[in-house]
Length: 496
Image (cartoon, rainbow, N blue to C red; front, top):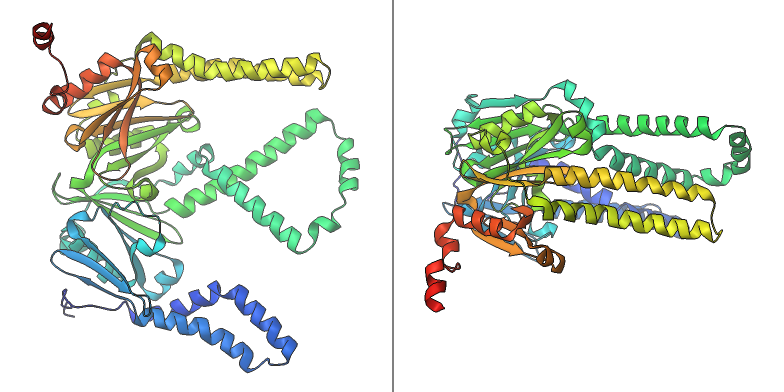
């Protein structure tokens, strides 16, 4: 089969004629239900319902026949719409990532969706460069063309596999926030379903209260917490498996001139490819739960990639810390930014951690004590005093995490407790330095140093670093850029 002329406009695969009409029918379900009720009331159940179904089906068919794309030597363009024509066009050198995804329906039909990440700040779906409905092989070939890769080499299996999914990793799933999110969503859906069928009206609340009154609080509360923990853990494991099953991270081509390729997903598969030239560093996240279990996750700092597309920068899901460090080492080419010593930020930064953590806790305890003193609430509220030791532990952990370094050609920063991160950004990827200080930071002689990258919103932030240390790091990294804003001792003496 010969490759089509890249300068001509091309339609998506004809099999999308089976997908677009069904999608439009689903979107129009509320309107179709209203038409069904109105038609039944008017006694027009034949043609009335037929028109209601024909309209969304026709829109789906029209969508296929009015969508075109083309790839030239310099640009990728997408054109769609009949009355309201919409043309998206971007230069090839603006392409940051290419995602090839396939839902369950697409996989049955042998199709996939190509999502082209260009670093745009727009959140409008109409501004996304998505080619929804290409044959799998054509989608992968287009991905290689957009990123300048050798598709034939990829097809021949020349990729170097860095890490594969290990089923034992699911033990880290309950230690992330995904379980809470899934549990909240599941409870919301269950509550909505019960309300729609009148379940709450038939619920015997008084009977449940009488039965619960016979339980000791010391038995009921632990049982309830165990059941809740089990439900959240189960949902987190299911979500983790559905999202990350078959996870494979590989590298194509020589180091520095190839690309990173990631594949994952159980029901909906997702393949992401990021050019080596776009990867400027890594971010290792160690939330408290993962840190206690010696786990972590790692993402790439991709030049020009917006935070809304952070899923495209994932390098390893929650997994053992040793695996995360091995992946980060492959990307950085050196272990120094990951395991090297960091420079502490001094007693002023430590004191600021304690003030920000313990201050609000003391206010809460004082408010609770005042309410108990006037007799408005029971003495059980004095238990809030436990937040003070918790705040002290939090402040201590946050203070111990603060640190920065300039090592092996990377700016390294670490901070956080509940969501601790260690970020390493290559110095050539830094295009500017921002020094920000609040009123309280200025009183303490501290500043926030931000190393910015080209495009997007990604950056490396060094929190509460002494003023002189912040300037020293920026100057050591880019002497020509920062030096012109500094006043040398000779200059100040002459001016005096």
